[in-house]
Image (tube, rainbow, N blue to C red; front, top):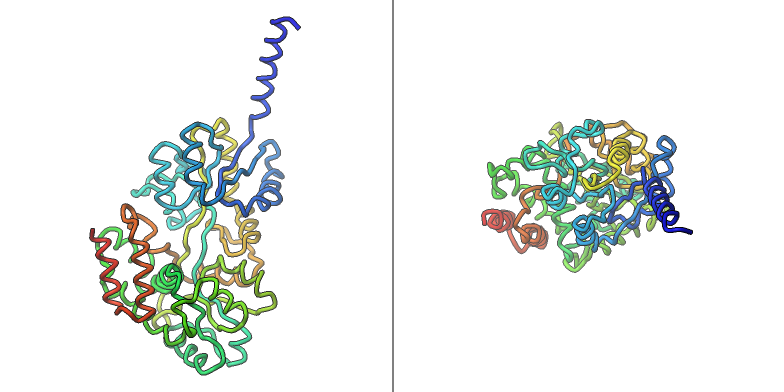
Length: 409
């Protein structure tokens, strides 16, 4: 083979290589556990209507994702589509020019302001990731125990504590919750029952805009309720872990479990045969407007360095469709599509929890946006406050004041 022939062959192979790559997308993600879901369900479903766009799901271990992704983005080797964590981590990527502004993408119109808030600039003018899924907070209850003790699902705080009183006199632990790990008292209790007091987004935005303080009544009130819970928790709850609480409820030894929709998959797997349902955080009195923590968790954006932007946009618009919403919600029990589509949810507990969106206003976890910025110890302060209140080692007002002191720094 002459030099000219070799050169021509090399050029041809190069062109063939480029041609083979055209229309191919690589997805960066930390969701290693979802690899089979993407390869066996999501991508094949997308390819039924987009057969020319090939997709590779290439996850990195969750603990390594942020650092690895930053290295690949900086080195120009990152994939076309970036799975986005909520709030500041993704905002930093957008600020550095490593995520594309999606504000004008057709699919964005299918999401509420709350759903988009996790992936927007502070002024809300730019949205840089397509919202994918959220988790919803609430209470799980053992239906057999409720039936045995003739208990009704509580709608108000008075009804809630009446149920706890009846359970206290039975052989069952009323509330499956421990304070050993700390985070549950904040993320699955305070930010679960709290939105009914601070009126969801209204109160959260007042904190962000410094028009309210955690020492105000609407933010102290959840701690006041939590201070009453210790009377209904199991012996030694101070050393009870998150896993212990899951087991206590899954084994049918506790009647009520405050948690999040992500727990559905655990109970469906580890409490086979247990009949359980979910109820939303009880309101102060009958007729009060209700609010739920519908926390944004996963989004997806486009790497500006991608050579396949049109294909990436087509995929993100499909992520905003009713077809993806129903597929993802039913395949990943407890993670709910954030789009406005009406979908059929097959898991009965998941269906109950997502139905709350039609009855209540959604909000996100209180300190997830802006408030944590530059204050690494704020989340820990919330954990400590929740532990102290439930352990009855601090009064609600004292706990709130300690967290506010971090915000005031």
